[in-house]
Length: 239
Length: 143
Image: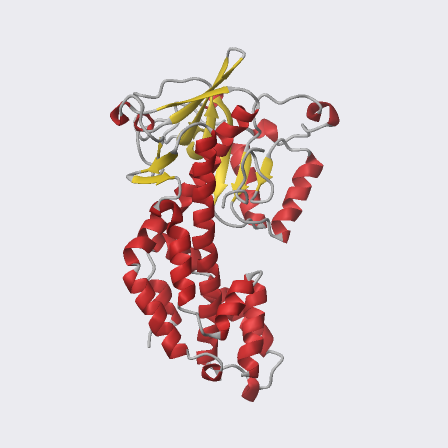
């Protein structure tokens, strides 16, 4: 029946040729697509500070030379933090470091435990810390974590938002209380709250969970392509 | 003739993983629709393949397009902060270079495969996986 409408044989042949000829390009796209969105979220986090008149500068690994053309971000969760660029934001003698794929201990991790409890965060905002001596498995103490962001290059469904709440519970459980009262919201916040940023939309199921987050007044955010972290740039603005 | 599975399996692993569940998602919708039909009216195995292929192409086209959109937005965001772009491993993203445009380039080539077929319009105009699945089921069923 399908052949009366579409010649499936011809279509499949064309697709086989396309995937055969574009194998290398599709592989490169596949290897970088998630990190590309993470790069956007990293830059949007730095832009959050820049928008609020913090001074921003990038620190690069010595290997890249004194003034490299572009920041170098991590390709995976592996890698020594000192080999990658990060941003330093300063205002009124307060300093924040914004890093990509940084390993941070969970709130309940204890140094004496048999195996470390830590999580590699897509974007981590930390207090100033020199990480040049850190190995790929070393982790930053939870007390240095100011905020963080998770980037997902997809649309959000309920389970994804729920997983993010679990992540916040492990890292900054105090955010999951009735914090966003009117009095709290009337104050200028010094740093962004932990956030989940998806490149697509929020499906109905995800919107339902977000509604309960707002009702419970949790101090976390969920951003997407129509609701951006940084006012200066969003995913829809790029053409 | 390559099957839907052969085509999906030819993708690199990081992309393939995203599409592993699309086939069964579409199959579930087809089964729900077929429950309303008498056996002679039900869709053939070949019809199922075509529907899955259309939905897969829609999702892959979206992924390619959103990949370039994210790369452009990231580059623009970095430019706003005073640097010209960024690197991931050895891959450099600056301005509108080939790496930034890669998703759009692949999306254009993918959609070229559908040119001249009625699926081109359906995939281009679809607003979601479920909607496209139902539309293609209807069109395939009516021949």
